[in-house]
Length: 380
Image (tube, rainbow, N blue to C red):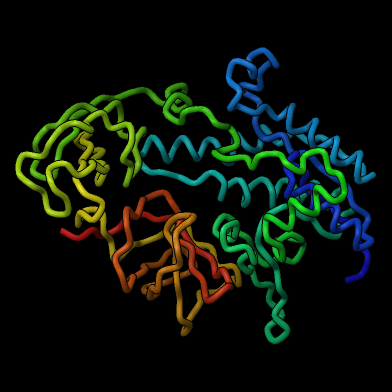
């Protein structure tokens, strides 16, 4: 690859730090950009000490700046908070209020990291951008198309979160650590003395941090209590509002000690309870006992707001799909597919398929694209 000006998204974490190091090692002109995407409750050091699980962007920027100093590259602090609020957070709240469970990381990649950030980098004269995602980009020599591939570390692959990228975005993107395993990344970081070599991986959604999710939602969505019913219609308790629950949820239901009136199919009377359905019209939360209950199994789903990485609907290829991150690829057949929507028929039933989450399709290691799950047909 010829030497290029590459703008790297430096988050303060070890993955983006090693990304910048590898590119500099390859001889590229590397510029770091720290993206600030959330500022509603950036708090003082005292407040952070009270809540050590919550990491402010200020702390991350200090880490990113320290990395840039060690690597000898420039770093710029860019505020995308307004774009984030308009394009990601507003949609996040709309979806939750409608009873669905969105994935803001997917939207953030599509709207901020590979749109607002990419545009900013191009204004700086960049030829490419790079991030610390565990994924790969490959240009197919036969078709000329850019393919999005899984990262080589199966436990860290992030192609699921990147499935909304298009040909233009992929053609301008590098994922240097996609060829590495996480252990190798940390070894490189330690070997060159990066200050964040042992920094813990961030978890959770960027604007929530490590705080309890329900506590965060409480600030934006009003509680609307309603009945919790089992599959026979018996009222078992009261929920605080359907927006605060997701399909397959087991913790935080407040009915752990309640026994079913008669054994339900899929679990005995002492089996744990799971959220199975949310009826927005009657404000009812339906729960079932047992992980394998038929209401938690779906063989068919419909998805909308589709994105195909190649720009065309895939045809005549063996497919696998996942309906949530960390799930294994499941063989599936694509039906009634268009540029906007599709139906997926799974060979084996999938567990707790959740509207608002994304169904992402693969052909081997190639991520073909996906869409937002609109509905799933459960077994009765």
